[in-house]
Amino acid sequence: MSGPRPAGPGPGAAAAGLDAHLVVDRGDFRLDLRLRAAPGETVALLGPNGAGKTTALRALAGLQVLTAGHIVLNGETLDRPGGRGAGRTRRVAPEHRRIGVVFQDYLLFPHLNAVDNVAFGPRRRGMGRAEARALAADWLDRVGLAEYGRRRPGQLSGGQAQRVALARALATDPALLLLDEPLAALDARTRLDTRVELHRRLAVHEGAAVLVTHDPVDALMLADRLVVVEEGRAVQEGDAEAVTARPRTDYIARLVGLNLYRGKASGTTVQLGPETALTTGEALEGEAFAAFAPSAVALFREEPDGSPRNTWRATVSGVHRHGDHLRVQLDGPLRTAADVTPAAAAHLGLEPGQTVWAAVKATEIRAYPA
Amino acid sequence: MSAKRPRQRRRIPAALLVPAVAGLAFLVLPLVGLLARAPWTEIPSRLAEPDILAALRLSLATATAATALSLLFGVPIAWLLARGDFPGRGLLRALVTVPLVLPPVVGGVALLLVFGRNGIVGAWLYDRFDVTIPFTTTAVVLAMTFVSMPFLVVSVEGALRGADVRFEEAAATLGAGRWTVFTHVTLPMIAPGVLAGAVLCWARALGEFGATITFAGNFPGRTQTMPLAVYLALQSDLEAAIVLSLLLLAVSVAVLASLRDRWTAAAA
Image (tube, rainbow over all chains, first blue to last red; front, side, top):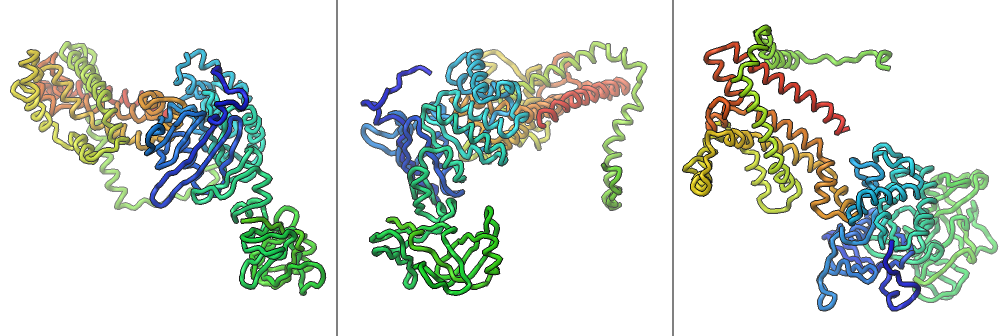
């Protein structure tokens, strides 16, 4: 739409985009999350179910009252409970925020057809009926649903409904777009196509976007930056590469398929327990994480001799197919996942309860400060 | 598909079947009796009688007015009960549903005490505006509204509780204020429930007898609705009572039948 936008970094640039500190206290659960998103940037909140991601989104949209903290969007304070002085208590109702939301199950109004669903926002913001319908038709065209304007939500497939929901959220020209698990309700095939389409839409969206997902693939493919949320707090933040290469929690390590341990580093040794240590390729001092891929683990029937600096006895607790190889779960001094080829597994005769020797080369272990 | 499947009908226990059949007979037989005794050849001439037409017209008009009043006040009440967050909500719900269980005659007496010329509201209306309510068509509408509005409230409240509030939240994020959310999202989504409530309410109002005769009296053309006319006819002219009853039956069935399809379509 019209309206002046700050061009490039200027006096207004500091205030552009989203700056939020979301604190929501609900007795047994506390969300305390700092969040920033620049115009044009997509930030993903990634975390397990119950981590508080959706609560954060609802707080941004104004559907959940903040206990403390603030929400500032393009310089306008939307919520600031208990503030004093210039930033005194202020709360903007959801209908007065320039925020578009794509809900998890879309929540398209069942009594309106696709065009009227998309036109709903522009109408509420004062646009005439004919003009709003034309705008809605244009949006449906942009998401490839020009033919479906007269269909009711019940007559749309999941993927189509998702795109109508996206068009509806974008039709109000929001300064901030919120997406709650936008692909979770779709089947695998539709999900792939819709993800590509969504990525294209997010790329041209000029406002900021916050995406909530528990699917790392969605987060990695759609977002410019990841914020990993666990138990109401941000535990890690960064771009896809940084987060996946150096996971800081078991949750992320599992998602990206790495073995992750925490210990105290001294030189190239990371002490994990009183009798357990890993030798790494990089020297480090102090609290540290050590991570290695399951494919870096070699398994032997007898204690190997030779180069690997890290060898230990382990018990096989499980074996299952993982892509074109087998993933072996090992118990022992370290709980470890190891990937072996089916041939190697047959050679070792792997089965639960069996004792094996595990070995990892020091150069395969990444160490980084905790 | 079902033809291939061997029929596995469970035997119905006689202890349930016998009372069920007896109960059905009890419900259906009176209607059959009504139809059997109907003086079919005389019906056209009977229906043309001005008294009957007047009673029918009055009944339809007052029941419709009562339903309109119930919608106007009942839907907001239902919204308060379903969505409101205030102390004493349970008490309020109990109060609203009292007319459901209250004998209609008692309701009529109570209305008379409040809206009668010496009643709290009635005296004021008379002194201030020279308006008298008891024994007028207005009284008929008020009596009907009093007994039938709870049906609408209960039905709409149920619909509101069943409605997903997240649609309302979605509407809010699209810029709709609370009133607009109500008119543009909530109301269309609970429309089947409102319609069902309105039909129940209308049917109850159409059959209203006790409160009407107590509060509005029995004046032909003014307050004599169909049920009152049926009762009166029964004293003198049995055939007239049967014809009037058939007419009421036909109207009720017609309304139910015409709305049934729309209900199921809207609910699907």
